[in-house]
Length: 494
Image 1 (cartoon, rainbow, N blue to C red):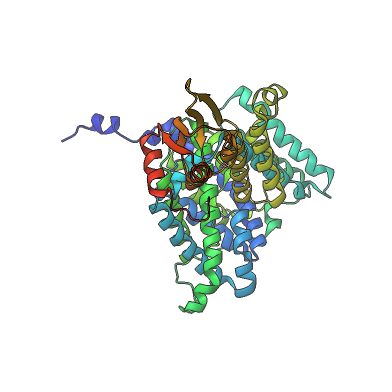
Image 2 (image 1 turned 30 degrees about the vertical axis):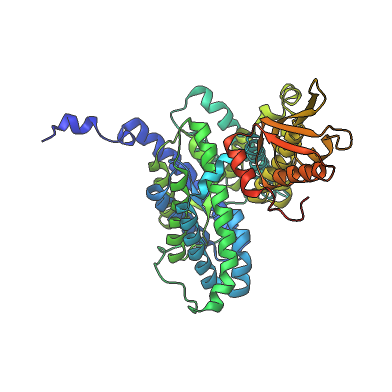
């Protein structure tokens, strides 16, 4: 039997008093920050605020167990709200929750099929653009709370910012955002300052979420209605969650299981749908608050969801008194800390290739314009692929040498041959003036696709029409296999 000291030595790291305190305080700060955003996203989706709050609760608690990225926070998000809003507006809440359940099933299937492996194809410049666009969107999302308001709102926000900038220089024992929220709320309540509060954003729930099956007809027509929105929810949610997981990996110097992140996100949406929530995905702003507060384990994720429910049910009257200025100050600091300032430093811009800067700016511009991180990332990847293909296409060279007896000419092709680089290959040969024998040496090249094989067929055909014998030599094994399988079978390509 294991002795008591041995049991204590093998306890999870999060059970140590120091880690437990850090995780609990970080979870509390996140829970406070979740309230106004969940309410706001519910309004965007056109549903009762309780639908968004319940979604943030069920997703955080579920992912604390099923998720693949410790310390990551998921809940109701703006991106998902925009996706499901048409369903709620045109067909009602029951169709919305059915959409969430189906979207979760799709996410779980995509996760099991290994869609997360596609993350390796995301260039660094897209990641930088994603982070910078995220920071801009977090900041701009706070502007409505700072527009057409009393100067007292700015004063309270300034107090909150001052605390978050100054307190970490004195102590990091307590998260500065939590102190800022408590102090600003205390000042507003004690002085009776009339400013917008969390309670002004919408009614907080007064009962627990109830498990149930969406009350929709189980027919093909229902599937036809919800399937397109469910697929959009699945793809947008997966992309944002995987990007956030990768961002947290970099911040914490740890690795996460992206496949588990994917199917765990699906499980969370299924659970959320059956509890009447609006669905969601990783919340990048709240995740940044959590990580910046020192959280590193699943405990903070669980407590963020659990404390959210406690706050809105047991302490709803107190939470309703929190000035929006305090939460705006927290999110502004998150935006400042999230932005990659090094990426826009003049020295950095001078050193990195202009193509990478273009990719980063394209990702930022599209994301900020559409307010959709998923669209921005897709556009960034497409721009990166186009620029990469254009750059590689110009790395192919063709050199020729004539045998001393003048009977054979050898063309040496160097580089990666694919659709972009092989299009001009056919024009690199002197068909009219070459001798009776031509050798195309591909020992320093690689054949990647059918476009290249078609180009080689076209070259061979042009020479054969002039009675010239062509020999293609030096291909490596993959290139030779591809050429043998396709050569002469690409009709209409010559």
